[in-house]
Each structure stands twice: as structure tokens, then as C-alpha cells.
Length: 358
Image (cartoon, rainbow, N blue to C red):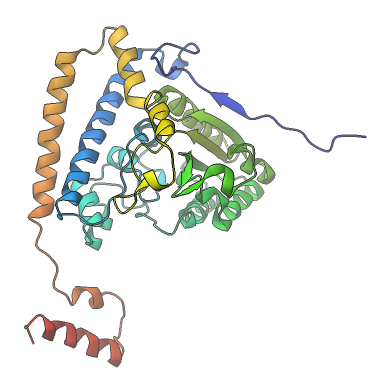
């Protein structure tokens, strides 16, 4: 018997859960001080996340998808990109979008039901808005990557989906096109263990999610997604390959969703308390704080000051969101058609009348 093919999936980890080194730091972050601004971004993100949840609980925000536990993965992905690259997120990658220049008030507007939050005022105009239908953004990013190749542009498209999203046909189509055309595409799969209420083992038989890219001929890695050093190194490798014309990558980031899927969910119905407790022991914030503290780069006074500063910055964004005038009801009709059909026009007029402005 002969073997037609065999494969291995490399696993990257540099920072252990206790903050000690599992391997020497890669050259790109050999100076530990380079991690300090990223740690501050993670702490800002956690501050924003908690305040957004509080807004939802007090009726000032619609359903909100917390990113608690994903901070290292999201911040690392965003920090690895160049301004000219294209980012295609799902609906939870705030840390990456903030790194791209998006303002927190826009996140709040989006979850507050105002589509103007998708204008991404501070982010590059070529980035894609949020994509709630899971994994459709992977194929959009594939199209962007194809345009970069055809135009001979030194740009990379980066898309993010969850573990459940990696089972969608859109994901496989993006993998296939990236491999067939050697596209500068990085497909990031955030494996947080649960596709809403479906455990990973119940929605795919693959041993790893990273290996799903092998069938398409892509470079594949599995990464400790709670280790920002590993995230940065994995993304650096993927970007380097893409810019050299060596094709795309699939990177599986192993992390955990420490909050409910959204504020409309109650994860206690489908996952055990012990599982969550174990996940808290491996979360990204604590290990990086321990590493930086041991390196003499961080202390309690700095943390207290930065938490206070972050809280003030988030409050400015919250106030900007709350003070944004609500759009008139007819706005939902006005940008859908060049020539509005008669029946839709009648609905528009009826909506205005219900507001007493007819």
C-alpha cells in the first residue's frame, strides 16, 4: 500500500497560561516592550465590552455580542494588518476594527439598531462592514484578494469567522478559490468551542479546523489564540507568504467565549460551569499581564491609571452614541430603490403617518 498524501498541522504557543515562556519570543517581538501597547488595547477592549453589556442591560442598546476572552486574537489580527489591506469581519471583532481606526461609538450604533454604525467612519473605506450571515464575508474577502492579484497590488485580504462558520459552504469556496489562484488571502477561524449552542465536536468531524484549508492547497496553522505573541507570529507568517505570492493561509485560533454568545443567549443552558472555570485559567489578559509584570514593564499603578483612562474614553464614545439623533422612520425606505415602487411608497407614507408627521 502507498500513501497518497499525509499532513501535519503546526501549533504555535509562546506564552503559557501562567505567563511564562513556552518558547523564545520570535524576532518580530523579541523586545517585550513592543507588547505593551497591545496589552493596553486589550484592556481598553475589555473595558468597552463591559460597558456595552451594561448599556444593553439598561435598555440603551440592542442585542450585543461580547468579545470577552477573544481579546488577544482580535487585537493581534488587527495589529498585523497594513492600512491598504482589506478586513472582512464577522460581528465580534471589535479589537481588530479599533486597530483599523473604527470608533467605539460606531459599534454601539450598530448594536443599537442604527445602520450608520456600519459606515466605519474612522476605518479604511475599503474594509467591509459587519457580516451577520456567518462566513459569507470569507468569500467577499476572496474576491478582494483576487482583485489584488489581478491588479498586481501589494495588498492582503483578511477575513474572520468562528468555528461554526468554518463549516459553511462560503468558507470552503473561499478556501478553494484562494488555493486555485494563489490568492493573498488570510482566513482566520476563531475556535471558541461553541457555534452558538453547538459544541465544536457536534458540527464537524475534522480533527482540527486548520486542516480544512489543506484540501484547497493553503498553508495551515493552529495557534493558541489566548497568546497574543503566537497570534502576531502566525499573522506575520501568513502576511509574508501572501505578499510574496506564495498563496493564502488558514489559521485556527484556539480560544474560548467567556461570555454568552450574545446578550440574548444564556450559555448556562448548554455548557457546564467547570468548563467555563477552566477557561478562565487560560484567558489572554492574565497571562500577558503576568509576563509584562515579570519583565518590569507593568505594575498595579499603571493598570489602575489605564483602566481609569479607558473608562473615560469609553464614556465619551457612549455619550456620543446616546446623543446621536435618531433617524426619521422613512430613512429605512429612502436608500433601497432608485425609483421606489408604489406599494413601498405607500408603506413609507403610512409609517410617517403613524408618527403623526403626515
